[in-house]
Length: 281
Length: 317
Image (cartoon, rainbow over all chains, first blue to last red; front, side, top):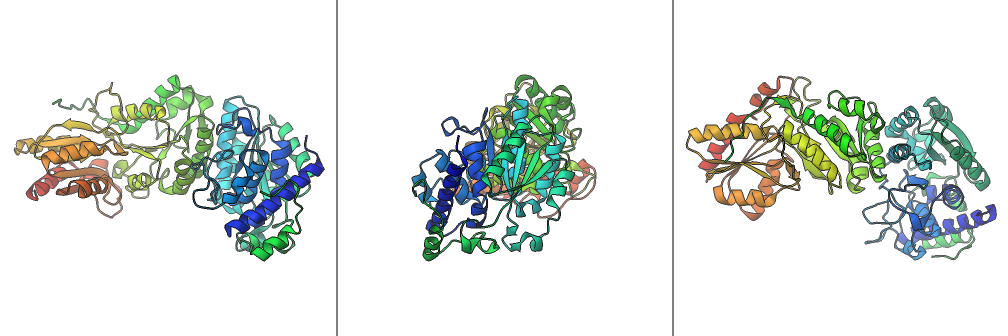
């Protein structure tokens, strides 16, 4: 089992990957990738029953993960590569012509680990609902995880899916909100205030809890608890409190780094703050 | 050549419902999803006999499309049903990203297509759907002509791996194709042999074309009638072969000219075999409330309009 120290080391390397990928491509989304790094690292390296060698698009007998907030490809691709789905060298091709690492996830290009395209927001929760229904029909007792952005929950389809999951008692569906409070145009509270998000999810029939999205022990404990509750009749939403741009001081807490690439100097400055633990790609 | 006889009017949506019910019996991977229109889509027999494989989605089509994509990538064969307007334009982005681009094996089943939806009026009468759906890469687009063909098409698309848009309608219309037909995706059917003009038709307009063919025969004009039930991929060879023989083409469809079969065929002909072509379709306008037959007449979509179009196109030969 991966211990906490190891998880933090992996997360540090993944943050380096994110900065370098976005820097290389001179485009991409570093802010939300850095805010959700600890969540995805804990999921893939500790919580999920996943296996790159056994991976199929159907995902029978394994836990599944869907990235609804499709712009978070830097963290997603790095996590998949570091978990062994493909060679880390391929991270060099991010957003380049002919790459399997498209700007937003694409299955057309055949990257292992990806189930469905995402990027147009609000759709991934519905797809995860379908996968959760399929697992129920197949008597497959594994979990379906999905990550949504907090700004993404402004999409109406999220709430269609939330009603659906509660109505169909999809207790094998574990959703996570990367609650960093920022979106492209500014703080979520000023762009489109979501109000009491926890009360909203609870009112829609979910069990909704709040968790520190940078404390890997707390993330693990919360997610494992949710997994242990498969069978209780309720879908789960974990609002993970995070900081946009976490780990790079000049990117932290601001919407300005939602979809902006750092300059060469900024990449260097960022990498100085992030320990290389597993070797850069 | 065989003469097609109307064996009794039936709605094509009931053909879909019957086909889906058949599939429920033979294919355990088939699941059906509906957005609060189970009765209208004739999905109630499937829902009653296979409740564990019927998923009610409520009035939430966007989520239904995404859910179907999730089921499909998990190995199921989901059939989603709603009115044509609500499973095309309303959810275009969901179909584009989660179904077409993701190549998920989702069957989008669209009833009440076209102006023959009737009294509900233009909000519900989509005549743009063929255009919208055929623009999407990876999507197969099918528009059968009667009850028997819709049933056969429903059964056939379950065996085809890939996303499909299946279009059918609300009103009772002549049922004239064989009940035991095997539906071949992408293969046009020559309904009548002729030498003076080719009438290419899809959906409800196939029967109107056969009626027109009889009327033309009385005028001494020999019309070939081709049923294009699969709009994408279109059977290009069938179109070119017939057009090369008759040297004049009329395309008839219950759709806007923009994006429709007529534009598709005229594109093929202008690139490969330039010939006079006329279309029987609706030109850049919305529909209105009315009875299906009177709407077809008023919007220029019945057999007499096809006869007129044939006379025009022959005069241009």
